[in-house]
Amino acid sequence: ILEKSMNYCDRCNNIFTDDKCPYCNSKKVREVRDDDYCFIIEKELIWAEALRELLDKNDIPYEVLTKYGAGLSIKMGPYNEVYRFYIPYKYMEQATNIISKMFNVI
Image (cartoon, rainbow, N blue to C red; front, side, top):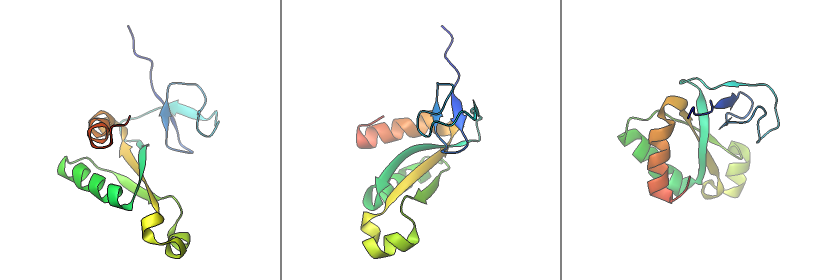
């Protein structure tokens, strides 16, 4: 059985099997490449720091963006900020396994 290829949305950095992005409804999608940074999970500060340590320990590159941004985060406090993790597609399986064990998700 052939596995359906994964598509990638440049707008929201998500991967999926549909012909249209199910997250932002964009029809401008393409086949994912190994070096595409793909959204994998979002976590609060304490869990984000623990996840960073595990990704670093396993030599998995990642990017982290805040959901609310610096201005709102200062008003709300850093512990209310949410951190969004992006992983190169070629590391997704390895990262997904780590996250699954750590958070019992995915």
